[in-house]
Image (cartoon, rainbow, N blue to C red):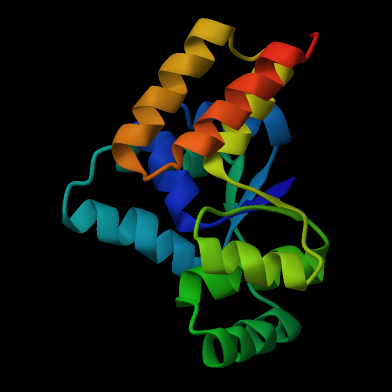
Length: 171
């Protein structure tokens, strides 16, 4: 099981690769704020990919967590002290309290997660993991990274590092 923030969920849906999250991690957990940001707000604007997120919720591998008092408190503290948006703070709180890995792309949220000792990966790293676990080939990884670069700003150095790691790894 893994926790994801809104951005990776939206991006993977737009890339038509949301199922990779289930293939790699089994159940995927989101908080109520992330659900509102992705599904509820997505429906209002007819966002591309929202139907994939809804389908994952219906299938049951994407689950909305009920926050515990501890998670709600941590979320409020993070929002106040770091300036993170509520969805990012919620995702970090869920991952931290439940001792789960986190998928998050926002730079500040990644720094806060690291400072809290929460293992995390970004969307690009998730694509690398899919390659390393034979869920896609090198051509597909390269295409997915190119597509990702069109919907999310990625440093060319990050793309180069992911491709280097993929090429150096024997599967």
